[in-house]
Image (cartoon, rainbow, N blue to C red; front, side, top):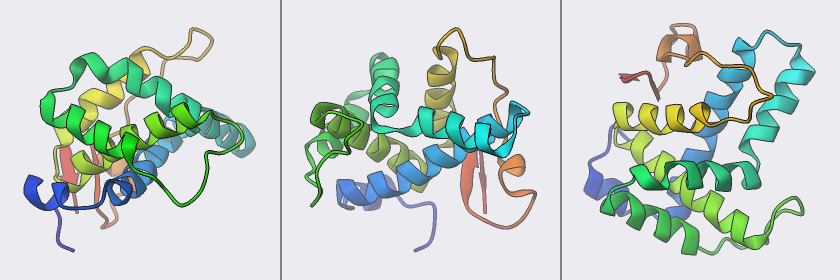
Length: 161
């Protein structure tokens, strides 16, 4: 699959496929945030899992809802209504799990279509509203995600191959 996809190509994907990619992108982004906090590996892992679990992603979706246009709202709805072949994790309600799947589908769509500025704006909105007990976090750029190596990731307004 050659990236970026057109919006039409990405819309033709199953919303769970979009969510699969969105989950990985969001997880990587939050790992970079944890890395920038200068903690040990265990604390980085705990901080990341706290930010990427279904309940946290459902909250992230609520934080960005006012920013979304009609196309994005439709992507979220499709993701939210998709039915995986497994139940919600014990740590989340089924409503939270559905909302997190909608959020992941949105992130996956923007990543696959190379909409880096939009993706960055959504991430920054989530980070701006983190709880008060968390320190401010720098926004990672694409080069910091892969040490300059060749890969496909979108952050800081750049699509890096």
